[in-house]
Image 1 (tube, rainbow, N blue to C red):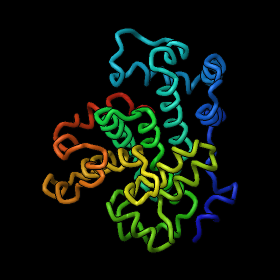
Image 2: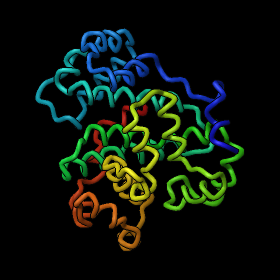
Image 3: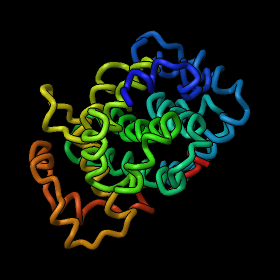
Length: 275
């Protein structure tokens, strides 16, 4: 299997909603119209209802109810609304993917994004960008299972999709791994270069020629999420802690392991994104 075959056949590419395409274009469009985006979101009743459900969730701790898409954009900010819609769009694109426990995977993915955002805040980095990368970082694994199930099946027998050595097994078998697929798919969808490059290096952020703080934050967030979701004992977590990555970000073990709020608090209300 080669990566070109995964991406060059239109029938193998996931279909994303039109409004998601518009929101992706807004990353590089400084003149993106607030009104135009609000109108596009409002034109989709199902998406609007889910957005409002998310906006009124415990996650945002707002003092009043948000009743319209315009209110959501004003109260949460355009970037966060865009992230919520992107997460929902990606979930819809891969809703029927076989060979992977989607319920567990989305919980892991959301936990990664939320933990990464929290870490970025502590490191005084762009937490919204990090949240975007965290939400998108799993698309390579999902696309592999959707587009090449026969090639993925032998890897699945050797390692769970959340195993720490999963990417190394993929690299050895195919010459690329799920992070590479995520980056290439992001480019097909026209995400900006900083996001696609961050996705490429989440697996091994210190190997990148141009260090991406977003990739490093998501690497740490994914480490925490992966271990918690799978119930890894604290002693084993300590042994696998990516200390060099944390040090590069100026973050310590105690912050990542002990100070970070529990998953329920970090993600409360956002699970609806993947319903």
